[in-house]
Image (tube, rainbow, N blue to C red):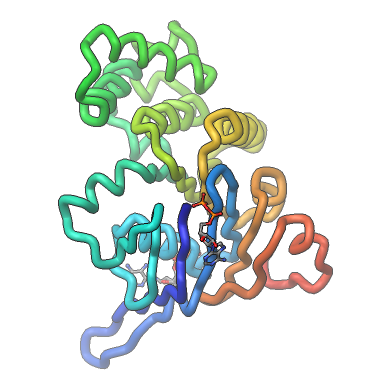
Length: 246
Ligand code: ADP
Ligand code: ADP
């Protein structure tokens, strides 16, 4: 499904004296269809940069990214847009991902209008209701605005919007980091349930090993830009040598 080969990203910094931050150094991995790969590591270890290179929000300095057999690091804009639809990202803060002036159903209908142009207005309404139910919200939430819902409920809406694209790959970058601890578990359970049901391929970024242990099949441990450990969750977290993350 997705192969990353020898990915490197340097950010240039310093105005007078040219210097570089090596954010990602020689990272390689592969995710199979329907599996969940976790990227864990302390803050600044390069996790988000990897996700941003995959979605081409950031240009890799070198390396290959192959999604469904296509090398995307050199893809042209038109094709890139189509490819991006197939990989949706959700982030830490749901509020910044939702339009405060749109109700939940308006927001989902708008997403469907953009992504599923062949739907009639009626199909969009039906699909919106399906998405709302899928993420565990109900009719009562439909006509509310983001500020009238909790952080956890808004993150459910963000997830519903991402799913409206029918993506093959879902990238979740610290999806529960802004939520109360009690709500975190609910959102993670929901993510895992939907991932299994839809056989979604998922990349889950987190600084929290416990989250990765619960949700992922395989894991990469990042430390200062390098993948220092890689493997099945049971074997990496069963390894007493893993001292890199906190
Ligand atoms: P899918 O595309 O359904 O996820 P697979 O995960 O089975 O299919 O593998 C897709 C291709 O990537 C196969 O040709 C496989 O040999 C290759 N592949 C598997 N693991 C890796 C890896 N770690 N690095 C590079 N290529 C890999
Ligand atoms: P993580 O997601 O693990 O917290 P990041 O990928 O955000 O790590 O950052 C990795 C490194 O790259 C850090 O040293 C960070 O300061 C640096 N970095 C990230 N984004 C930029 C940027 N746009 N410009 C310059 N340096 C950056």
